[in-house]
Length: 403
Length: 120
Image (cartoon, rainbow over all chains, first blue to last red):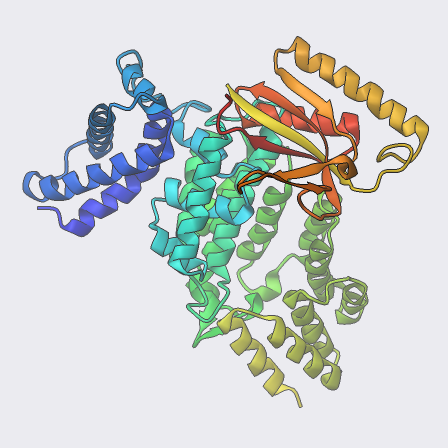
């Protein structure tokens, strides 16, 4: 007999597909969400008695579809909803097959990440409609009051309906740009999980897991897009180090991590994906970042790291993205190859005084050069600019160790 | 199909060349906008479009009281006002945004795209 939590787990697992197919069928997110909610209530009543049906996704889709039709008939509205209800007799198309560009979820993710929506609304809608997270969970993840998050989501849904943001996979010519927006949303979700802002948990596994789950779906839907593969590889390789990354509430930098604590299965999968990217030979930002991470996860010990390879990959990334943040990360690798003095000269040139990682990097380089007084100042600036509790704790310890 | 307002905002104060830097720039923008309008008509998106006289020619009428009250000048005191607009009929926002980008390039100003709730 399934527990309530088991029913809810199935429901969340199926939620994105369920909502996406209802949105396609009824053309309205609110109707889709309401019908899905009613299907959950029915499942919670029936499944503990009857057991989870063999194909829970199909059961939920049928039940929710019937609920939506009932509701539309009951309301007997003479507006667009009524037309949708009458259309049901003609629109008998089965749920669309899961093909490269056919899946309903793919349409919906492009809607949720549409450039006409505010960036924070894109993240929230993606987590709500495709991830099946509740508004309360999303609000908690992004440290805003639930009412604020609810308003943000409601406003975005209203805009989608009123301005007619289409449920459509963009045309081939627009796909790279629009896909970039989708990948950026997934990576933002992942990063918020990996280096959480605010005073809560320094790492939020539920967010990194959700970002990976959505990236897996996206890769399944767009297997020919190497940047999707690259992003998934990147997230898997970073995630593989999650357990080793915080100890006693302090962030542990890469070279001090216990590599035995890394998740070998995730690393193997990530490396395999990186190899697929290399074979595709259409490099992009996420693929290169994944390759850089693969160099790290390839090294049995920090001292075995192939830093010249890392610098070469950053050089390649710089050609695509000549931003100061990429230059900063490159300088960290240069420090290992050519020494901290060369790296510091590169870092000091970068216009990043508001970015905490710039101060962290300077502090570390100054410390290695024995310039303690300047290093202390840099650590103070880094601590002030850091919002992650574990990173603050680590920086405070490093500062305290300076003589 | 949905109707969208595509409005172009510009400074309240206009030079002798409208909002443009020179006579040539103004004439080029007029020509480009005219060509864009023709495309809208050919492709069936066209509903209506027009350029507005300066905001200083506006009059605000408040008819909510017993007798209407007239006030000289635009309703809002701002630095930017609507200088002209299109009303288009497009299947969805993606199409409207593409047209807005073309219109923006033609007239040389930013374009705000806003759906109509309905048309009388």
